[in-house]
Image (cartoon, each protein chain N blue to C red):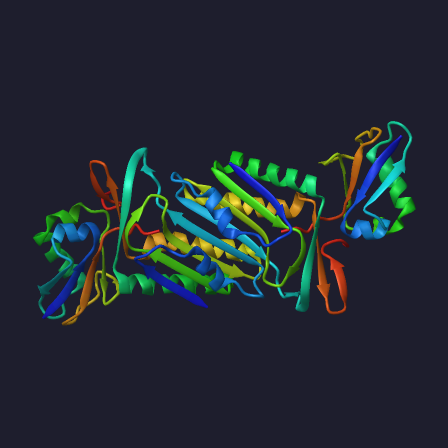
Length: 138
Length: 138
Length: 80
Length: 80
């Protein structure tokens, strides 16, 4: 079972955990990516995420399906935030449940690693003196 | 910063996450070990955890300290349940925050793997037809 | 034929708009569209790898476009 | 001298009690205590590796006991 969401409002970690919880799951791994207050030592004021929404949701679903195939996990919730985020807010929450913990860890890590490579979402860091689209330039 | 707890009442995942959250952490990994409804296909009615409490807390603290040393993570919350647990309840919750996600994943996995080897806590599975102390016999 | 072009992130800043229509010869490929766009918006050439997607799927350089396709300019992603 | 012995999990079922006092010669080692306990409670020999801890720290077989030490019989752990 897969729950994919792209939200303009605060992500609900507890809802992700509840979605993946089941009586035959022994291990749940959850990853929460939060907005850091600095990049390479330079203070970040806030972040903005822009998404190609339909494709982002489709790519997130593909990743979850691949993780289920590869690692034999049972349930995955994958929620990503869009819009303006303050320091400390969650940009992404991924919860994975599996009968045994190794698969839950591996699948969760696969999801975030792959999401960062393939899902069309872009992060703009806002500094005191300007804004930068992350990773845009070589 | 380390928060170690051994609790007779339901574990609070959200409290563990809030403990490790900080403005300079970019990634939080959380592991939740829950009570499964079956072991090797045999229905489990409930579980009971017994702990050598003072030593269990000391060993859990050692593990968290080692994880901070080894992986450079910032904050760890490690809560374990004792007493009677129903199916689906959390037996252990581990939350780890780090500037970057790889360290958070590695440290969280180190904590649960090591906890299962060294922390003096014992699990008794209660079946329809009897009880078994897990891993007691070769 | 005419395709719809979506631009995101830094690409949107370079093209100046999220949505635009682009006229192309029939059976134009992604490579042909890319060449046309880089000519029109030289800033695109300064970016780390820019991918293109057709109707929401990543497309290869040899993929052939059809009238009314939705094509997206996808600069390096940075979600998560 | 006398040490306090704590038993947990399956070990508690075998010794029949969580707390007991054990009389030992002065300077007895963990190995000597283990031998004495296995003789008194043969069921302990059937378990997967049983460790012993002195005052809350895992102890080697050659560790020497002192009067009033708290020693714990630690059958294979299974937390988490």
